[in-house]
Image (cartoon, rainbow, N blue to C red; front, top):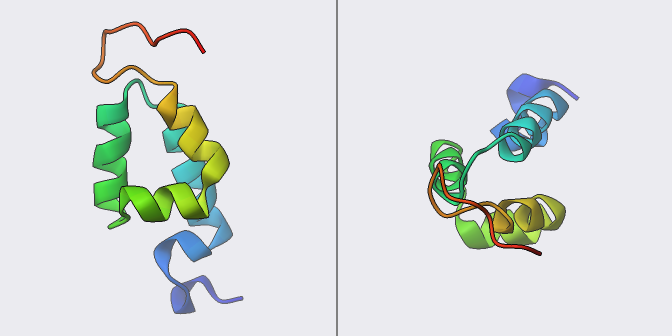
Length: 70
């Protein structure tokens, strides 16, 4: 598969970078900014990446807050 012919998150390299960015985010706000940069809605994110959506759900709303216990 030629990465230039695919959409941004369809290439393995881009999806790996996206996953790493979500997993290392400090807050839900940071995740929302990341989704915006990839032109991805929250609904599309949840449907396409359900495991990452659960990771993001466990983050605090803003940096510096403590995430609620799961």
